[in-house]
Length: 607
Image (cartoon, rainbow, N blue to C red):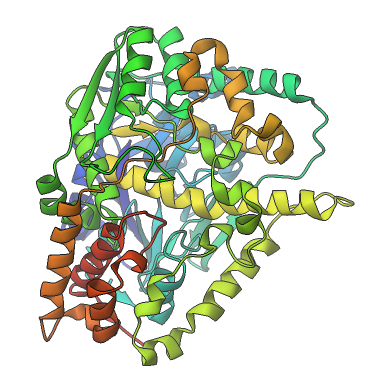
């Protein structure tokens, strides 16, 4: 895992622009604490910060390679290619040789052999840029589900790119500006922003499953992958067998590393399944890790979190013989660490859910460099109320927005009139539905099942993967997400919801597929979401900080938000305070206001 950045310009000589590319690269230091590399040519400049995971000595970047006809290609790459060994063997049979054991070199040679079509052969999480000096062409590629981020923007007669917005904003010709459409993204659809939308003016994020080809005539983004609708004829038992085989292959591939490996273990079925499968085959010491936050509310008082994680995580670790570590996060740490999420994301985020994850990952990094996560299982197997509850499923917008107030309710009226948030949300929803593949002749129930799965896969999941990437890479930890394998997504898109919830049991397919690996208490444990602090002291601290902002006459927040609406919400309507995500605590909404205020202090809002 790494941080990448670069600048290509077809009319300027970039060989004297080392200070610029150095500044851009330096912003990515947390993503790659092990080494820095810079490569310059007449029209292309690449930067790379490395987190060494495979071939520690031989995988340095940016990496150059010369083709059979003397053509030169250069790559800067973030991520892991899980089938690189098979690709290397195939390329060797085609006459290519290799000087390293790295997947980076495999990508370069694959490009020389297959050109941009190499994307159809990759299994992994990745974001990379390849400069083809002979063709004077830039290729930007992002993995199918968007596990690794990649942003780009036109600058002059060229293009800049990077793993995070801060890399692009370090370029002297990029301004930290946000227009009204960017504000609409933050206010109307904050839980799951529109794929490709970077919020910052003039900037785009490469959409999952897409590539960008740029040359002197311009740049074009195109899709190379999406799920396809096919009939599913396998019964429940056969489907569980298919899933077990898929998961076994996925986890085995994702255990390859030349550095210490651990797992994120909450004691839920998702992380426990991954941990148990990893423990069966991993050759070496495997550690497991969980987080605990202040939550004095009684068990079951939060329907999203009906039971604490620690007892279940410890049960799994003991059963598997693993050394388990628990990161205790105090209320004081949550308050003091509010800016960690904002700095990592470059945008307002999810408050203590970001902060506690940051602290967890920082602790995990002390024990290992790679950690496997159970993220994405709910999206794949149907673990959320909005995938099951008919009120959510048949909501006339994104199902997770049923019954929720968005931050747009606190906007100043003149801003509301400009961005028209309800219309904006409706248009984004219409666009999303227009992408959904269907089978001809399917009834309305099955069509809606496909729509809900697709919306979760392309909107909801992206937000979770983005959070996981930013918090982990802020401390130089590589987190792998086996359930986000594209083959699993392709398979489960076509499995009817009644199979996924066979017998009325949420995620029944997954539970049955791994039941022999885990204690019954884990197999039958209801879903419990990532822990959120319910400490009244934390809520009071966040409330006090927002009240302080209300007393600031020039607070940037009120360039957008109505001061009196915010005051009323914070003082007398706290329980219904809108925030970016569904939460049983008002602290998320309070922290969103604080982060928005701090973020607006560093950007310029333009009409």
